[in-house]
Image (cartoon, rainbow, N blue to C red; front, side, top):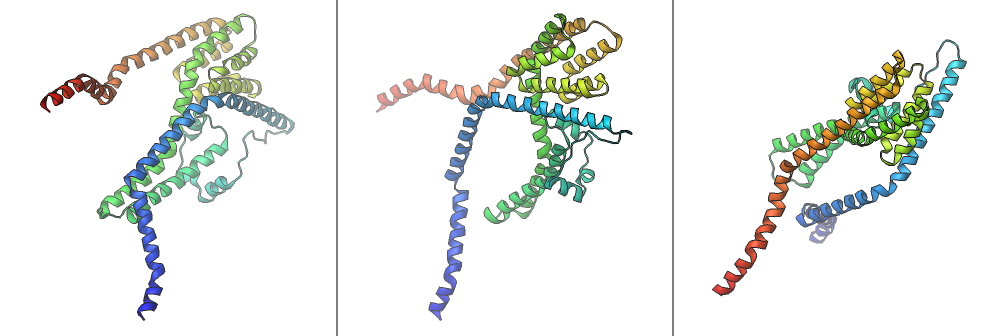
Length: 343
């Protein structure tokens, strides 16, 4: 009986030993530090290699915009061919995300009236990004909560109070709910910064092209080709503006769409000036000259604001990194001399 009992309990003991080994490996500070260093190293390599793919990204984005232009042309021809205006220019979205969102009615449950504008500001256009946003907004809270609960209740069960673990799980649930919004906001902010960094130069080029006798469409096309090296996002927006100027029923809608997608006061003022210039017949060159000057001043004031914030931001890094090294360099020889004298 003793031999049979040991044989019977041997697999169970092995599983327990394996579980303890896995838990010790995951909770070992050395392993956690090594994983953190590996992630930081990988992120550094990706950051350094990202500029090498910038040219390919520009070509891909311009190709996607040209594809969008061809699709607008095809849809507009179908709309004109059908009497009664029953056709729609909206993209069709089919897939797993669409089925889940429609079946659970997530667009009503998690309704956000500004989600289309937010996604457009981040560079995601069409119905598919909207469906993807609602899908991940529904899935991520449960995923984050499950990961936190698995870690606190099973892997790292070292006697923490139950209320603390439940509160951490609820915190993971809340973090998962707001994670898609945070991601979209960060992407939109980076995209807006890239656009505004090159927008004054683009206005200067647009002014030169218009005053040389080009039409506004030809000028926008020329500027979108030249500004791609400085800002891929701005080149994409200008190309999309050119497509909308050609195929939308009113040109005002194209300018308003540009202002809505960028969500910046400088571009909104330029769009308003161009709408008024076309409506009232005022010279477009004069309006562009004034807008270019205002945007250059706006960029200069933003740079001065960052420069004024720099001393306050450098205080903590100087205290943490520079002062200890300075104390070591100044007091190190004296301490060594005193220690030699005392010895």
